[in-house]
Image (cartoon, rainbow, N blue to C red; front, top):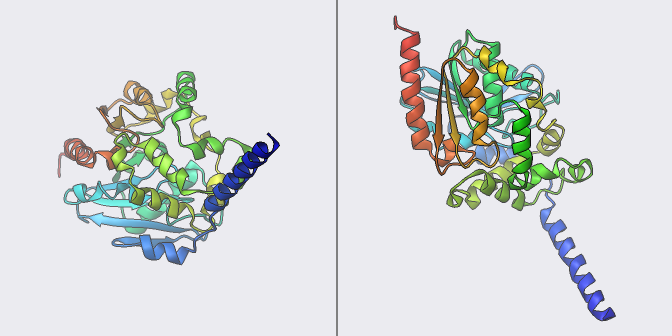
Length: 331
């Protein structure tokens, strides 16, 4: 019996050791990741505070502009399947928000929604863009609708893709009920003890499981796409930056009535099978935004622009062509 227990203990220790060893990754130098991912239309804007913002400016320069904002742990690469489908009709500016993608950590350590809004303003000012539509997925949607409230004279249209909103009591209850379906790493971030270890312990499994949780069609959770998420999270300083963020705190400042302040015509797109932000959350947008259109995609999860880019593009083109033409009758 003692031999069996000893053998089991040794096997357990060996398993723990292997899992720990294979899950520990050191930071990847910026130069290496930029060589791999800063391709095509990629550019960088150096800001006065030392931040270096990665962005892409694509499409038709004389067409209406759409700013594209990714979600938590995402990057502008999340829009790569959507951009080509919109490129003939719009000028498309996508960017990596501070803490993520090839922007990564910034000297100020300021990863608030206000900071992200300032980043959007810096990019648009640099490009000489005064009016634009703004589209955001998940956390990026939360930045987008707040920007539309703060700068109504700039924002011509608002597109919310499985967007974060505000947390009502019902939303919190639903969030708790689906917590087991959320990415494992997000759950681990809720523990102050485990959270510290994530600065180095970042197995590829986290990226793979997170992607599988995010999409409905599991064939879209490819190894290549998961590797992209994993690579970018390893950019020097990014893990520390992300772990410093107050996860979920952006939702606690307002009630649904805040959406009544949104003047821009708004298109809401949400996947019915979204495991991250339930489709029910879109009801708050529908009930409170004056000029709103809601599209619910069946067999789609948290990344509609990746999972069903053709339908997403068609809905955006149709929506903005009508709304922008109506708002600019003299043109």
